[in-house]
Image 1 (cartoon, rainbow, N blue to C red):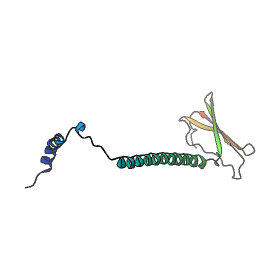
Image 2: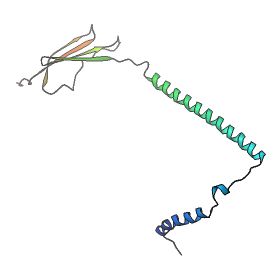
Image 3: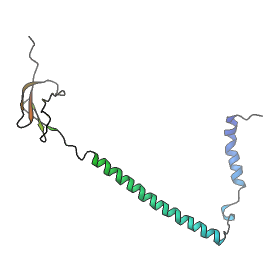
Image 4: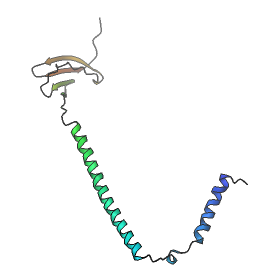
Length: 145
């Protein structure tokens, strides 16, 4: 005879209840262990507590090592430049400035994210100061010829 899964799932709670009700009460389940067994169990419990202590220390050391490695990854990196901006009387000005001396040539910055309605009116580059200035003014693009 084949029992379907549905019937098995339906009968499981009733079977569990019958099994649990057949067990004696906790109060009736008292057993005295031999002193030798109690001593061996105490030793095992102490050893387990020590292992937990060492595992916790190893886990803490691993976390600290990972943090130190993560912090040191970018420790030697330096930013190439900083971008400053200001806005006054409808003019938006960006200054891109090198942060440190470099052997790489200074390259003109091309901004692609300028607020809508602003057009480029002035730009200049100073290799001596290591900066590029861009000025935008609110207005329309001049008609092309």
